[in-house]
Amino acid sequence: MGGRDVGLPRPEETMAWTLRDGEADTVVKGPALDFFQEWMEFRTQRPRVEAMAILFASTTQGWWAAGYVNYLWEQGLRGNQVTKEVNALRLSFERMGWSGCLCWDTMPVKVALATVGRSVVEMRSHMGHRIRMEKFDMNFEAMFTLRGRLVPSEEIWESQPTKEEADAALLYLLAYALFDLGVRGGNLADTGKGGIGMAEGRVDKGSEETEVAEHEKGPGEVWTPREEERYVSRRHETQWRDWTYFFREAEGRLKPVLGHQLAGFWRQHPEAWPERGEVIFPTSKTAGKGKNGGVVVQPVKFGQASPVEKAEFNLMLGFLRWSGCEDPDLPVFLRKPIPEMGCRGEVPGKHRRIRISDLANELKKLAISVGIGHNHLSPISFRKGHVSTCAALGRWEEGKRLEEEMRRMKFRSGQWTANSRVPQTTYLHTGAVVGPFARVSSWAEAVKVGGGFEAWIERQGAEEGVDLDTQRAWTKR
Image 1 (cartoon, rainbow, N blue to C red):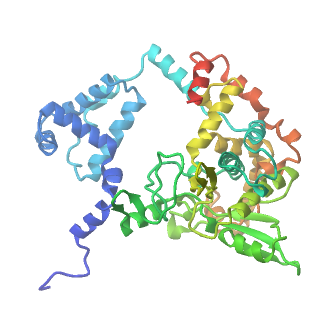
Image 2 (image 1 turned 180 degrees about the vertical axis):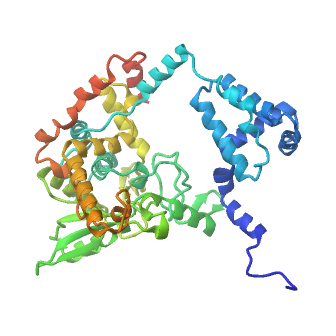
Image 3 (image 1 turned 120 degrees about the horizontal axis):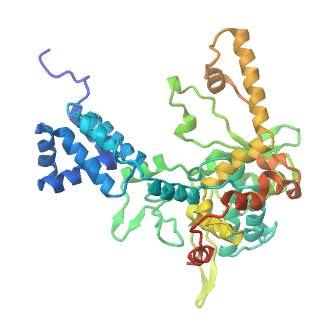
């Protein structure tokens, strides 16, 4: 051909595309390679590019790499910590196109890795640290205690709550959703990771209150369309559009209403109240990375299957009605502005974005109040508690029955091997699978499930180094 084939990708354009958001730093290089290159700069006293050229040209590449392993050991890394760094470096070298440099697979490195294990004293210290940092499962007794502390009354959303009351009740609703739905914290609220704001404006992660102001980024700064698009595309927080509620019409038919359409529906039907709801969390875990993205998307369902679930369901609906949000893109766990009286009259309020860190601090206070170290509770405790509580209430038996039915089905049709997961992930729709709150009829019954606070105290045992007085002072900061 006489000219360039316009159908071929342009390498420089493709490279610019991968670099525009700094993805190469995260996916290709990573922190392990960055630290190694800094070490090479220090040891050679040359700029980074020259330092790496010295390594590639060296006939003793393995000893350079072994020297870095020794450096990691001197910095306090031991055993699997060093191995993890070396594995990350091996992968980074491959992704950077440096596969010709085999320094991480040489004998000096293998010998060095065999030398970085922990001594008996270090192993004892490491095990003690792991035990002190172990996260316990949330249970119904803890949920009941949180509810009593954070929700002043069942009618809170029908009154005019103060900012403090609304924020506290919203924290409990976040805890309820995490425990009952079994999702990651980042799917419900702001984690402070990777976000530069909201679709509607800048959110200052360091301030106690956050204001929604269109395209406000800072003094003299304005969001570019690319910055806004990038944040919106990466935000994991559930939005109003992700929630659906089912009302019963006069004719007896179900009427599904999306979350951001609730306010309008209630204006037309003020007495209507949904029977149940569902939510879809759009994450890569459920979007289907496999062949053809073939995964059956299963909404998480909740409703009024028991008196306990009904009370939490109504508390959540009360917040949604009080909030009155009609923007499908806003996070659900965003408290609307609440005006306050100031010295010069009424002061308009600001939106406040509920954060996982707010809930984490409440958990630390709860842990200390019942006599365990605050390191044992964190937002991940809700997900662990969801799994453990469902298993204790019969979800494990349900899973075994489903597994047996799928085995029989695969044998009958003869279309799949015995170990194939395709029928479950691609074709099976399981219908409603209820959470922990739907499986108990009263709080008196619920608090007995999982052992409560006593199980935490027994699990902790007589740990060394747990100073509850110091931890109690820390949580009051």
